[in-house]
Length: 268
Image (cartoon, rainbow, N blue to C red; front, top):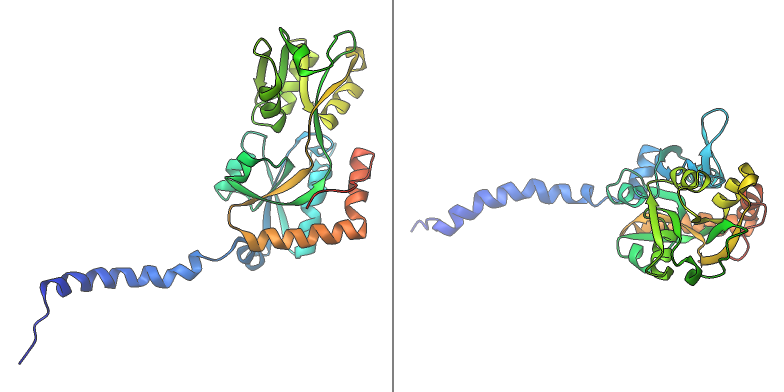
């Protein structure tokens, strides 16, 4: 007796046939970022060019700074070419999420909200955020910002910290990058500025007539390297490089070159 295929079998066969190529392709799609980097012999690393001394444009119009040095250091240790991808505070995480960059080395602080969408390596350099204003302005705490205008870079960690701490009557004005934030303070558009100590130091050195000074800390926030969510092989490999650099004193040397002080005891 000949058993004829049922209607269900007749329906499933073409469906299964269509699925086979997809199933075969799964291992390739599951290739880790580290595998891809080593295969291409190239890594794309997002860096800033508006955040001296971590990342800015030198006299030869090429990116330089601590974050740029760290990017090139990692590339050298991996034995691959480095493609530097310029980002701002606002787009650095989206670049990582959309795989326009394999790593983000851009003065990136770690917090619970960011950990929901990206992963982080161990810290590689020191950093802290603070409020700066003219010496004549009596500001010792966040409460003293009541009724004052404060400039901050949109999406930066100091934006989040200032938003939490500032009184309701403080007028927080957000700008798209650090250059715009600094320009707003220098030109008198805002009375105070919330930014990283390095940015403020560079601003005050270039504009001594402002009479600006440090007022109070918003947050101590060492810099971490951002990795796309779930890319554990790449994250662990970069952690190995950071640990070796710390032991060899290379992190201290980079920090001393650009910040004037060693990296010190950074969190893992």
